[in-house]
Image (cartoon, rainbow, N blue to C red; front, side):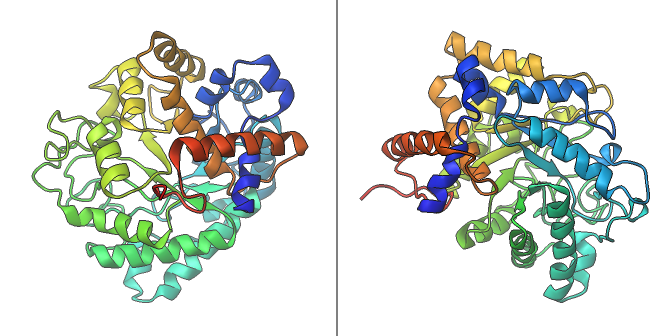
Length: 394
């Protein structure tokens, strides 16, 4: 109880910024995750952070200084961004291992292997060793979340994005759940959050959502939910990342999972009981951009239940800064009544509760704000204060 209360002290950020800006602007900013262009702190991104226009940032290989001793230089970039933030940033990376590996040995970082390679060792020790090495490296650099593990099933041997690059531990759902739990456990030793992905399952697809729609209606099965169910029941989920797959059995309208109320609200939050943060896969992927305009994708995503929307600026044609535009679009929907303020507040509370996991209050002002919001949160949601699961009042 006390730990969660202390964590909520991060709720608003610095008093001076809160006094200067509409709290709605700050809350919307917490819902935006972006990437940046080079292996140096970007002046525009720094200013957007100072203004509270974004709450999370993601790093790719292009952001790693090209040196055999990149650790200190990369740590300085992260420190520079974090120092500028009125509300501490979620600083994330996709460090799965193998192909999805931003911190490579050639830059002086520890060796990593794919999820499939870890599983082939037929021992939890393999997962423990490589996951702990990754987590220790991330913690030392200043990352506080790894967008991993991939808990998709290797269901389709011809899958071009999951199976081809050995991102899945196995085609056996129980094995995936077991190995993913061990992977997450090592990250928790170093207070690095994780985000299982890609909900509700990308392993049976025959197409890559980076390039267009991936319809899994005839290939997806409910066993792809098993790893999520096992991790949720064990309390090993910090956040969930969505996929852009289309499944008409789950959503008769054929909306991608990221934009589907049926997938995120009814299935993930309703059936599986997850009440914590939901993060989108990159909103610049062709599965979204080719079929939905930016404004419509944002509207559908928020109404579906997204809390944090990722605009990585890491896909060709998406390099233009999007923070102002995304922020304006969301605020416009709120002011016009198409998205309610309460819906923004829901995401805000979830995000702040997640951030409470890795930060502590900076001064007494936060404590007062914390107590106010905790009372409000209890009154509105009756939420279990020790986990992301919903617990009704008795």
